[in-house]
Length: 396
Image 1 (spheres, rainbow, N blue to C red):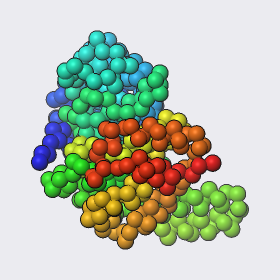
Image 2 (cartoon, rainbow, N blue to C red; image 1 turned 45 degrees about the vertical axis):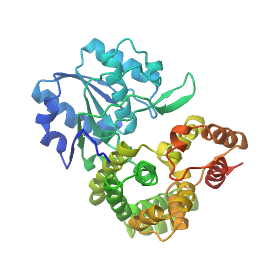
Image 3 (cartoon, rainbow, N blue to C red; image 1 turned 90 degrees about the vertical axis):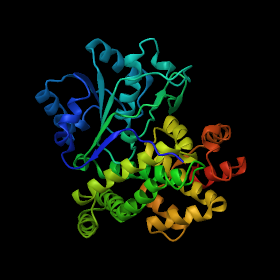
Protein backbone atom coordinates (compact mmCIF):
# COMPACT_ATOMS: atom_id res chain seq x y z
CA UNK A 1 0.00 0.00 0.00
CA UNK A 2 1.15 3.50 -0.78
CA UNK A 3 -0.16 7.01 -0.12
CA UNK A 4 1.54 9.84 -2.00
CA UNK A 5 0.34 13.42 -2.47
CA UNK A 6 3.41 15.69 -2.60
CA UNK A 7 1.44 18.93 -3.01
CA UNK A 8 1.62 21.41 -0.13
CA UNK A 9 -2.11 22.03 0.45
CA UNK A 10 -3.73 24.74 2.56
CA UNK A 11 -7.51 24.86 3.02
CA UNK A 12 -8.77 27.93 4.87
CA UNK A 13 -10.38 31.31 4.43
CA UNK A 14 -8.04 33.94 2.97
CA UNK A 15 -5.35 31.29 2.50
CA UNK A 16 -3.76 33.08 -0.50
CA UNK A 17 -2.89 36.04 1.68
CA UNK A 18 -2.21 33.91 4.76
CA UNK A 19 0.35 31.88 2.84
CA UNK A 20 1.91 34.62 0.77
CA UNK A 21 5.35 33.51 1.94
CA UNK A 22 4.90 30.05 0.45
CA UNK A 23 3.55 31.47 -2.82
CA UNK A 24 6.38 33.98 -3.21
CA UNK A 25 8.98 31.27 -2.56
CA UNK A 26 8.02 29.37 -5.74
CA UNK A 27 9.71 31.78 -8.16
CA UNK A 28 10.26 35.32 -9.35
CA UNK A 29 8.35 35.35 -12.65
CA UNK A 30 4.93 33.75 -13.10
CA UNK A 31 2.38 33.15 -15.82
CA UNK A 32 -1.12 33.31 -14.36
CA UNK A 33 -3.44 30.97 -16.23
CA UNK A 34 -7.20 31.43 -15.89
CA UNK A 35 -10.51 31.66 -17.71
CA UNK A 36 -12.06 34.73 -19.26
CA UNK A 37 -13.80 36.33 -16.29
CA UNK A 38 -14.67 34.20 -13.22
CA UNK A 39 -11.35 34.74 -11.43
CA UNK A 40 -11.86 38.47 -11.71
CA UNK A 41 -15.43 38.27 -10.40
CA UNK A 42 -14.80 35.98 -7.43
CA UNK A 43 -11.72 37.88 -6.23
CA UNK A 44 -9.19 35.07 -6.58
CA UNK A 45 -7.18 36.83 -9.28
CA UNK A 46 -7.00 40.00 -7.22
CA UNK A 47 -5.88 38.05 -4.13
CA UNK A 48 -3.04 36.43 -6.08
CA UNK A 49 -1.85 39.57 -7.88
CA UNK A 50 -1.85 41.57 -4.63
CA UNK A 51 0.50 39.04 -3.09
CA UNK A 52 2.74 38.95 -6.17
CA UNK A 53 2.86 42.76 -6.40
CA UNK A 54 3.74 43.09 -2.72
CA UNK A 55 6.43 40.43 -3.03
CA UNK A 56 8.04 41.79 -6.18
CA UNK A 57 7.17 38.81 -8.36
CA UNK A 58 6.66 39.73 -12.02
CA UNK A 59 3.69 38.14 -13.73
CA UNK A 60 1.71 38.02 -16.94
CA UNK A 61 -1.94 36.99 -17.16
CA UNK A 62 -3.17 34.49 -19.75
CA UNK A 63 -6.97 34.52 -19.46
CA UNK A 64 -7.97 32.54 -22.54
CA UNK A 65 -8.59 29.09 -21.08
CA UNK A 66 -11.87 27.60 -22.27
CA UNK A 67 -13.94 24.83 -20.72
CA UNK A 68 -12.17 21.58 -21.65
CA UNK A 69 -8.85 23.25 -22.56
CA UNK A 70 -7.42 22.41 -25.97
CA UNK A 71 -3.91 21.66 -27.14
CA UNK A 72 -4.07 24.90 -29.14
CA UNK A 73 -4.76 26.90 -25.98
CA UNK A 74 -2.05 25.29 -23.86
CA UNK A 75 0.43 25.62 -26.71
CA UNK A 76 -0.31 29.33 -26.99
CA UNK A 77 -0.03 29.85 -23.25
CA UNK A 78 3.26 27.97 -23.04
CA UNK A 79 4.74 30.11 -25.82
CA UNK A 80 3.72 33.27 -23.96
CA UNK A 81 5.26 31.85 -20.77
CA UNK A 82 8.57 31.17 -22.55
CA UNK A 83 8.68 34.64 -24.12
CA UNK A 84 7.96 36.20 -20.73
CA UNK A 85 10.64 34.11 -19.04
CA UNK A 86 8.20 32.58 -16.55
CA UNK A 87 9.69 30.36 -13.87
CA UNK A 88 6.38 28.92 -12.70
CA UNK A 89 2.70 28.72 -13.60
CA UNK A 90 -0.26 29.73 -11.42
CA UNK A 91 -3.58 28.12 -12.36
CA UNK A 92 -6.63 29.99 -11.02
CA UNK A 93 -10.11 28.59 -11.62
CA UNK A 94 -11.78 25.24 -12.07
CA UNK A 95 -10.22 22.09 -13.41
CA UNK A 96 -9.89 23.55 -16.89
CA UNK A 97 -7.58 26.36 -15.77
CA UNK A 98 -5.53 24.18 -13.44
CA UNK A 99 -5.22 21.35 -15.97
CA UNK A 100 -4.15 23.87 -18.63
CA UNK A 101 -1.57 25.26 -16.22
CA UNK A 102 -0.14 21.77 -15.73
CA UNK A 103 0.12 21.16 -19.46
CA UNK A 104 1.80 24.53 -19.96
CA UNK A 105 4.27 23.67 -17.19
CA UNK A 106 5.37 20.64 -19.23
CA UNK A 107 5.66 22.62 -22.46
CA UNK A 108 7.45 25.54 -20.80
CA UNK A 109 10.57 23.52 -19.99
CA UNK A 110 10.32 21.16 -22.96
CA UNK A 111 10.18 23.48 -25.99
CA UNK A 112 10.81 20.59 -28.39
CA UNK A 113 7.45 19.03 -27.41
CA UNK A 114 4.52 20.14 -29.55
CA UNK A 115 1.24 20.67 -27.72
CA UNK A 116 -0.52 18.30 -30.11
CA UNK A 117 1.87 15.57 -28.94
CA UNK A 118 0.98 15.87 -25.26
CA UNK A 119 -1.16 12.72 -25.33
CA UNK A 120 1.70 10.57 -26.65
CA UNK A 121 3.54 8.51 -24.05
CA UNK A 122 7.05 9.97 -23.65
CA UNK A 123 10.11 7.76 -23.87
CA UNK A 124 11.15 9.07 -20.44
CA UNK A 125 9.54 11.24 -17.74
CA UNK A 126 9.67 14.94 -18.59
CA UNK A 127 10.49 17.70 -16.14
CA UNK A 128 8.00 20.51 -15.64
CA UNK A 129 7.94 24.00 -14.19
CA UNK A 130 6.39 24.37 -10.72
CA UNK A 131 2.60 24.83 -10.65
CA UNK A 132 0.56 26.69 -8.04
CA UNK A 133 -3.16 25.86 -7.98
CA UNK A 134 -5.90 28.17 -6.70
CA UNK A 135 -9.19 26.32 -7.26
CA UNK A 136 -12.45 28.27 -7.48
CA UNK A 137 -14.89 25.41 -8.08
CA UNK A 138 -15.72 22.43 -5.88
CA UNK A 139 -15.34 19.51 -8.24
CA UNK A 140 -12.19 18.56 -10.06
CA UNK A 141 -9.71 18.37 -7.20
CA UNK A 142 -6.99 19.01 -9.79
CA UNK A 143 -5.05 20.90 -7.13
CA UNK A 144 -4.32 17.54 -5.45
CA UNK A 145 -3.79 15.27 -8.46
CA UNK A 146 -1.05 14.76 -11.07
CA UNK A 147 -3.65 14.56 -13.84
CA UNK A 148 -4.39 17.05 -16.63
CA UNK A 149 -7.33 16.45 -18.99
CA UNK A 150 -6.64 18.10 -22.33
CA UNK A 151 -8.64 18.04 -25.58
CA UNK A 152 -7.08 17.68 -29.03
CA UNK A 153 -9.77 18.81 -31.47
CA UNK A 154 -7.66 17.83 -34.47
CA UNK A 155 -8.11 14.14 -33.66
CA UNK A 156 -11.33 14.47 -31.62
CA UNK A 157 -9.69 13.27 -28.41
CA UNK A 158 -10.31 14.26 -24.80
CA UNK A 159 -8.36 12.40 -22.13
CA UNK A 160 -5.63 12.79 -19.55
CA UNK A 161 -2.11 13.34 -20.79
CA UNK A 162 0.43 10.71 -19.64
CA UNK A 163 2.58 13.23 -17.77
CA UNK A 164 2.27 13.45 -13.97
CA UNK A 165 2.26 17.04 -12.72
CA UNK A 166 1.46 17.49 -9.05
CA UNK A 167 1.16 21.19 -8.13
CA UNK A 168 3.88 22.37 -5.77
CA UNK A 169 1.36 24.42 -3.80
CA UNK A 170 -2.44 24.50 -3.55
CA UNK A 171 -4.35 27.33 -1.89
CA UNK A 172 -7.99 26.33 -1.36
CA UNK A 173 -10.52 28.92 -0.18
CA UNK A 174 -14.28 28.29 -0.09
CA UNK A 175 -15.10 32.00 -0.33
CA UNK A 176 -14.50 31.88 -4.09
CA UNK A 177 -17.72 29.89 -4.48
CA UNK A 178 -19.83 32.86 -3.33
CA UNK A 179 -20.17 34.34 -6.83
CA UNK A 180 -20.57 31.02 -8.65
CA UNK A 181 -23.91 30.06 -10.14
CA UNK A 182 -25.66 27.43 -8.06
CA UNK A 183 -25.90 25.00 -10.97
CA UNK A 184 -22.14 25.25 -11.47
CA UNK A 185 -21.64 24.38 -7.80
CA UNK A 186 -23.98 21.41 -8.20
CA UNK A 187 -22.31 20.23 -11.40
CA UNK A 188 -18.83 20.35 -9.96
CA UNK A 189 -19.96 18.74 -6.69
CA UNK A 190 -21.27 15.80 -8.73
CA UNK A 191 -17.80 15.46 -10.24
CA UNK A 192 -16.29 15.33 -6.73
CA UNK A 193 -18.86 12.68 -5.77
CA UNK A 194 -17.85 10.60 -8.78
CA UNK A 195 -14.17 10.88 -7.87
CA UNK A 196 -14.79 9.41 -4.44
CA UNK A 197 -17.18 6.69 -5.58
CA UNK A 198 -14.88 5.64 -8.42
CA UNK A 199 -11.92 5.65 -6.03
CA UNK A 200 -13.61 3.15 -3.71
CA UNK A 201 -15.13 1.01 -6.47
CA UNK A 202 -11.72 0.48 -8.00
CA UNK A 203 -9.15 -2.33 -8.07
CA UNK A 204 -6.54 0.04 -6.62
CA UNK A 205 -8.65 0.76 -3.54
CA UNK A 206 -7.00 -0.29 -0.27
CA UNK A 207 -7.30 0.35 3.46
CA UNK A 208 -4.84 3.24 3.38
CA UNK A 209 -6.10 5.25 0.42
CA UNK A 210 -9.78 4.69 1.32
CA UNK A 211 -9.40 7.08 4.25
CA UNK A 212 -9.83 10.04 1.87
CA UNK A 213 -12.98 9.04 -0.07
CA UNK A 214 -14.71 7.59 2.97
CA UNK A 215 -14.32 10.81 4.93
CA UNK A 216 -15.11 12.89 1.84
CA UNK A 217 -18.33 10.98 1.12
CA UNK A 218 -19.51 11.64 4.66
CA UNK A 219 -18.93 15.38 4.16
CA UNK A 220 -20.61 15.26 0.74
CA UNK A 221 -23.63 13.52 2.26
CA UNK A 222 -23.99 16.40 4.69
CA UNK A 223 -24.31 18.78 1.71
CA UNK A 224 -26.60 16.73 -0.52
CA UNK A 225 -29.94 18.13 0.66
CA UNK A 226 -28.77 21.70 0.06
CA UNK A 227 -27.55 20.72 -3.41
CA UNK A 228 -30.85 19.02 -4.29
CA UNK A 229 -32.92 21.87 -2.88
CA UNK A 230 -30.90 24.42 -4.83
CA UNK A 231 -31.64 22.63 -8.11
CA UNK A 232 -35.33 22.35 -7.24
CA UNK A 233 -35.52 26.05 -6.38
CA UNK A 234 -33.78 27.02 -9.63
CA UNK A 235 -36.15 24.83 -11.63
CA UNK A 236 -39.18 26.28 -9.87
CA UNK A 237 -37.99 29.82 -10.55
CA UNK A 238 -37.45 29.04 -14.23
CA UNK A 239 -40.95 27.57 -14.58
CA UNK A 240 -42.61 30.42 -12.76
CA UNK A 241 -41.29 32.97 -15.24
CA UNK A 242 -43.77 31.48 -17.69
CA UNK A 243 -46.52 30.66 -15.21
CA UNK A 244 -46.96 34.15 -13.75
CA UNK A 245 -46.94 36.00 -10.43
CA UNK A 246 -48.67 33.39 -8.27
CA UNK A 247 -46.15 30.74 -9.29
CA UNK A 248 -43.33 33.20 -8.68
CA UNK A 249 -44.55 33.77 -5.12
CA UNK A 250 -44.77 30.03 -4.51
CA UNK A 251 -41.29 29.47 -5.88
CA UNK A 252 -39.96 32.29 -3.73
CA UNK A 253 -41.53 30.80 -0.60
CA UNK A 254 -40.14 27.36 -1.40
CA UNK A 255 -36.69 28.82 -1.95
CA UNK A 256 -36.77 30.76 1.33
CA UNK A 257 -37.75 27.64 3.28
CA UNK A 258 -35.09 25.48 1.61
CA UNK A 259 -31.67 24.55 2.93
CA UNK A 260 -29.48 26.90 0.89
CA UNK A 261 -26.04 26.53 -0.63
CA UNK A 262 -24.43 29.41 1.21
CA UNK A 263 -21.31 30.50 3.05
CA UNK A 264 -21.85 27.83 5.69
CA UNK A 265 -21.26 25.14 3.04
CA UNK A 266 -18.68 26.76 0.76
CA UNK A 267 -15.68 25.66 2.80
CA UNK A 268 -17.06 22.13 3.27
CA UNK A 269 -17.76 21.73 -0.45
CA UNK A 270 -14.30 22.97 -1.39
CA UNK A 271 -12.65 20.81 1.25
CA UNK A 272 -14.58 17.79 -0.02
CA UNK A 273 -13.44 18.51 -3.58
CA UNK A 274 -9.79 18.54 -2.53
CA UNK A 275 -10.23 15.29 -0.61
CA UNK A 276 -11.87 13.80 -3.71
CA UNK A 277 -8.84 14.88 -5.75
CA UNK A 278 -6.53 13.17 -3.28
CA UNK A 279 -8.70 10.07 -3.65
CA UNK A 280 -8.24 9.71 -7.40
CA UNK A 281 -4.56 10.63 -7.12
CA UNK A 282 -4.22 7.20 -5.47
CA UNK A 283 -6.45 5.14 -7.76
CA UNK A 284 -7.33 7.05 -10.95
CA UNK A 285 -10.91 7.52 -12.11
CA UNK A 286 -12.88 4.57 -13.48
CA UNK A 287 -15.57 3.76 -16.04
CA UNK A 288 -17.98 6.72 -15.51
CA UNK A 289 -15.19 9.20 -16.24
CA UNK A 290 -14.10 7.22 -19.27
CA UNK A 291 -17.66 7.29 -20.60
CA UNK A 292 -18.07 10.99 -19.92
CA UNK A 293 -15.37 12.24 -22.27
CA UNK A 294 -17.18 11.20 -25.47
CA UNK A 295 -20.35 12.85 -24.20
CA UNK A 296 -18.54 16.13 -23.58
CA UNK A 297 -16.76 16.01 -26.94
CA UNK A 298 -19.88 15.19 -28.95
CA UNK A 299 -22.56 17.20 -27.15
CA UNK A 300 -20.67 19.80 -25.13
CA UNK A 301 -22.10 18.38 -21.90
CA UNK A 302 -20.45 19.91 -18.80
CA UNK A 303 -18.02 17.48 -17.20
CA UNK A 304 -19.80 16.95 -13.87
CA UNK A 305 -23.16 15.94 -15.34
CA UNK A 306 -21.44 13.96 -18.10
CA UNK A 307 -19.83 11.78 -15.42
CA UNK A 308 -22.90 11.75 -13.20
CA UNK A 309 -25.18 10.32 -15.87
CA UNK A 310 -23.20 7.06 -15.78
CA UNK A 311 -22.50 6.88 -12.06
CA UNK A 312 -25.74 5.26 -10.87
CA UNK A 313 -25.57 2.35 -13.30
CA UNK A 314 -21.87 1.86 -12.55
CA UNK A 315 -22.64 1.54 -8.84
CA UNK A 316 -25.40 -0.92 -9.70
CA UNK A 317 -22.96 -3.09 -11.69
CA UNK A 318 -20.39 -2.94 -8.88
CA UNK A 319 -23.00 -4.02 -6.33
CA UNK A 320 -22.89 -7.49 -7.87
CA UNK A 321 -19.10 -7.64 -7.56
CA UNK A 322 -18.23 -5.76 -4.35
CA UNK A 323 -21.52 -5.44 -2.43
CA UNK A 324 -19.87 -4.46 0.84
CA UNK A 325 -18.07 -1.55 -0.81
CA UNK A 326 -21.27 -0.31 -2.42
CA UNK A 327 -23.09 -0.61 0.91
CA UNK A 328 -20.33 1.49 2.51
CA UNK A 329 -20.66 4.21 -0.14
CA UNK A 330 -24.44 4.38 0.29
CA UNK A 331 -24.19 4.41 4.08
CA UNK A 332 -21.70 7.30 4.09
CA UNK A 333 -24.03 9.30 1.85
CA UNK A 334 -27.03 8.56 4.05
CA UNK A 335 -28.82 6.56 1.34
CA UNK A 336 -30.64 3.24 1.66
CA UNK A 337 -30.04 1.64 -1.72
CA UNK A 338 -28.78 2.08 -5.28
CA UNK A 339 -32.20 3.27 -6.41
CA UNK A 340 -32.03 6.21 -3.98
CA UNK A 341 -28.52 6.97 -5.22
CA UNK A 342 -29.69 7.05 -8.86
CA UNK A 343 -32.73 9.16 -7.97
CA UNK A 344 -30.51 11.66 -6.14
CA UNK A 345 -28.41 12.05 -9.28
CA UNK A 346 -31.51 12.56 -11.43
CA UNK A 347 -32.65 15.34 -9.10
CA UNK A 348 -29.26 17.00 -9.35
CA UNK A 349 -28.47 16.74 -13.06
CA UNK A 350 -31.60 15.44 -14.81
CA UNK A 351 -31.24 13.11 -17.79
CA UNK A 352 -29.31 13.13 -21.05
CA UNK A 353 -30.72 12.38 -24.51
CA UNK A 354 -28.56 11.15 -27.39
CA UNK A 355 -29.14 9.65 -30.81
CA UNK A 356 -28.92 5.91 -31.30
CA UNK A 357 -25.91 6.48 -33.53
CA UNK A 358 -24.01 8.33 -30.81
CA UNK A 359 -24.97 5.85 -28.11
CA UNK A 360 -23.68 2.93 -30.18
CA UNK A 361 -20.52 4.82 -31.08
CA UNK A 362 -19.83 5.59 -27.42
CA UNK A 363 -20.39 1.97 -26.35
CA UNK A 364 -18.15 0.56 -29.06
CA UNK A 365 -15.28 2.85 -28.03
CA UNK A 366 -15.71 2.09 -24.33
CA UNK A 367 -15.56 -1.68 -24.84
CA UNK A 368 -11.91 -1.38 -25.86
CA UNK A 369 -10.91 1.26 -23.30
CA UNK A 370 -8.77 -1.03 -21.16
CA UNK A 371 -7.34 1.85 -19.13
CA UNK A 372 -10.78 2.27 -17.51
CA UNK A 373 -12.34 -1.19 -17.86
CA UNK A 374 -9.41 -2.86 -16.11
CA UNK A 375 -10.04 -0.77 -12.99
CA UNK A 376 -13.47 -2.33 -12.30
CA UNK A 377 -13.31 -4.66 -9.28
CA UNK A 378 -14.30 -8.11 -10.42
CA UNK A 379 -14.04 -7.09 -14.08
CA UNK A 380 -16.72 -5.90 -16.46
CA UNK A 381 -18.20 -7.60 -19.51
CA UNK A 382 -19.20 -6.01 -22.85
CA UNK A 383 -22.81 -6.76 -21.90
CA UNK A 384 -22.40 -4.80 -18.68
CA UNK A 385 -20.94 -1.87 -20.60
CA UNK A 386 -24.02 -1.94 -22.84
CA UNK A 387 -26.25 -2.06 -19.75
CA UNK A 388 -24.64 1.06 -18.28
CA UNK A 389 -25.28 2.99 -21.50
CA UNK A 390 -28.86 1.71 -21.75
CA UNK A 391 -29.59 2.63 -18.12
CA UNK A 392 -27.83 6.00 -18.22
CA UNK A 393 -28.86 7.67 -21.48
CA UNK A 394 -32.21 8.43 -23.09
CA UNK A 395 -32.00 7.37 -26.74
CA UNK A 396 -34.11 9.38 -29.15
